[in-house]
Length: 258
Ligand code: NAP
Image: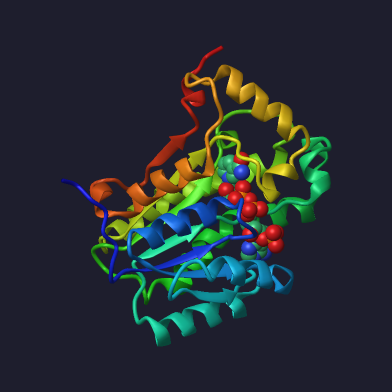
């Protein structure tokens, strides 16, 4: 029988805001598979919520990490080097854009808004990976980020976040090539709409979700648990031959033409 056993492995999971977060669903799956998990939170405001969630994952660590501040990324790398000595799994579930950039005209995106969205939602994947590289196990480490169909299609109101996701997906392929030489795999899950804090920031999110449920081959929306299970597969040895891949967990929505 094929089982997923991550005991003895260490997983850094970034981007948990609350129990609805896709990163939380992934962290739970990793924990159930036996991995030791470190959750990071973006700022003090989120600390109590993330600490409470971490209480459900025996033996987990909770650290602050705002990806716009290199010093906090350094601090996470230092702490994991001290406490764990190696990292086999890295999950990047982080995205941000100014609210006005997710409802106004895309053509009017400000320079600052564009830079911010791309820095937090795409560059951070590269930058965090770079900081963790000395810790990442050769021949076996696995990295995962979270994307959305707007990386490659026009989606109303997704605006600059679509630009960020396009860069993120290109980064997955480029990193897969570069880190593949060290046996490190890099993949993304492209998730259908799930009601989370970040998703609710997109103007018209609820009607987008209704549309997906009507049009998707499975005639429903996906759950965050389904994202968690697909992520666990990609992060495990069951996917040892897969890298540079964007795996759609969207009830099949992306295959439709009409
Ligand atoms: P979420 O729970 O709101 O998670 C987004 C996380 O990013 C939050 O923890 C947020 O913290 C964090 N973040 C923002 N700025 C940060 C910074 N400077 N440093 C560190 N962390 C920062 O929403 P989610 O839907 O699970 O999002 C996770 C990922 O899935 C995102 O990349 C998103 O684009 C992607 N995704 C989501 C959907 C969906 O429908 N939900 C679909 C496809 C892809 P704050 O709360 O403090 O901002």
